[in-house]
Image (tube, rainbow, N blue to C red):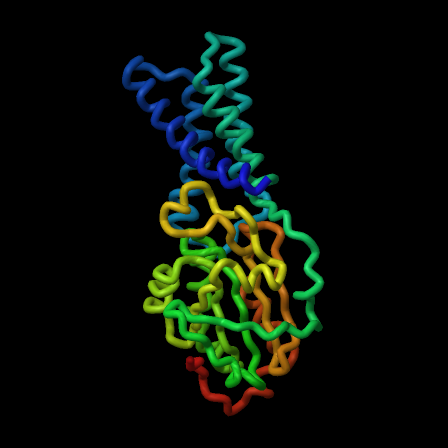
Length: 299
């Protein structure tokens, strides 16, 4: 199932881009444009803009669950295409690109691909104590977590720099790094991505954000959040392993007990920072850590 998803998302992006270009070429060569082809181009452009402009350029940290705007546009386009080809001359191109790749592809993306088939995780429930973890920086040096005693810790597990939602989530945390520091929170950002990618993130973000590499998903497997074959097809060529990690965010108090846990079942749904601060303030963390200086973990 994960392998099918890894292939699906790549072909979805490619086919919708190809469909839009095909429509443009059809208009140029035929010196005309049918209603079916116009509707097909609208459908293909909707998905292409979602991936390339909305996720790639606007960089949201989360989206709505069902993406209603996308579904309304692609469904309407499919209805127009089917009506036009049934009344006028039948054209296979708009049906393939607009109905199958555009409309059906959008529904599969929203209701099938975006859903994470993760099992119930008893270990990472609120109230449990997080097991001791051996963490390494991107340079291979181990982090000394002994200094974290008495401090809350935020563990953000993210798939890698290839995921625009994860990068935006990290940027959100970076903007609010002082708010976390006021509450004495130690920030650990953990990914199984290549060390070079983690290093690039480390040098472009505040030093109080500790970027950790989870080699071979060993930590993710121990915590039950390894996403086997979760990497989109082709990214292995950039040095990523096909096994990655489910987007997961866990916060512990000064005793290592979990006070917040987000185990999202939809890769596009990530917690808002307000939820994290509310969880910290509910435990009166700021008062407990009053006088603590911002901590940069040493090796």
